[in-house]
Length: 518
Image (cartoon, rainbow, N blue to C red; front, side, top):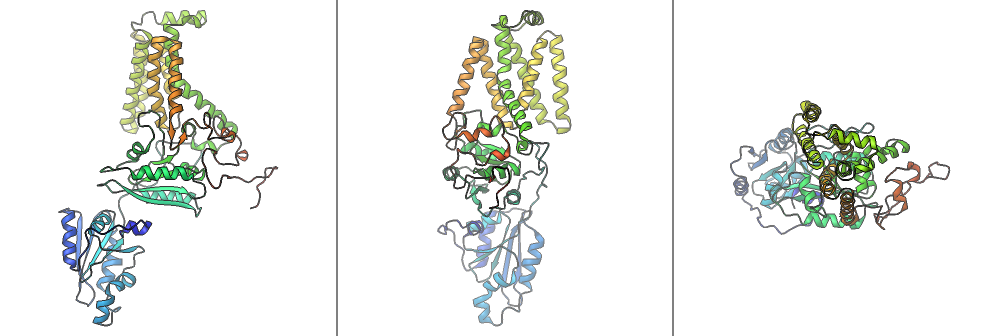
């Protein structure tokens, strides 16, 4: 079994490229597979006073050379006292080196050349001993990593400031730090025929929905691709509808968000080389909730959630309402306001749709430029560019002053969304509803709203309706306590009802509000 197979107890497969008793042949075969790579290092040595030779092979930059020097080479080269005779040397040398000489915490035996090469690429050191077909694989992982810092895409006011990094084991450690439940399971997979990317499926045994867990594993097993370079690759393969602009899988950089999801019975998927962890299933409510919602009192949180839902609607329909009223239904406005709007558009040469389309596209360009530029100048470019272009467009008579206000408020409403992926979907549907409004006025807005609602009703996330608990029988009344508003935490004694689990109780409280001793 390979290093990772042994560590996570995967099912053993038949060996196709088995090692031979000629250790030099094994070394040459490994070097041939890896080619003339400058970072491939090997060191031949003699085992104590035995006269037997050995070779250690590793990839520079993926291993800790101190471990190789002190715990492997030094111990094995000085080894002589543990063997008393040539008979002992012949029969017990390999076991003595494994059990008494090399002091690494994790060490396994391999007889498969392909798995040896795969483990070398994962920071494992291979020890070849003369006369032995087995190869010792010693863990000595160490590569450049970024320190744990505050997530750049999910800033909050109150809550922990640590975020995931690009190393999978560091990320699972951050989860373990928050979840000390012994039923927390972290199951390993390897995806990508060439990249051999490590993937970890995380869940709590007693709270997870077995149906969702089974579906996650089945979809991951079906992924057949050369390389997995980021969690977005996995997300696109396992999501229910790749044609929808709305995300059906939650991605986060925050360990506290993942921990809360696991406690609730959901499944998390960690991928090596990326700080983003995927969480399934996801509903539209999860994308409109902020991590700090549960750190503040329920009155403040409920107010902010209502504000987010209002911003959700405003970011889609506000430009379309402007188009419909100015082009088709000006009589709906008070007389003074209707006269002001007509006067402000007197010198504008474009119809409302073209007018607002120009401003929206300009805003999207500014947003994209601000994200691609260095952080020190990106924010300045967005603010200054918006002010300068807006003012210049009004003075040039290209757009009306009221339109600039509408576009600005729409942009702010879109930025209120806690999740970036959901805001992108809103921006796409905003243009769709604008087209309907330009053709049919308010009737077009109603038609666009029906189409959006119909689309949302057809979406699922691993068997869970996207609009749960609003339109699904999978949810129950208790799920409304944590949807549009958040009720006091003392009233939320049960976990989400739309997931089937063994343990659905998360809070034991007496009528007086005191915790029961259990």
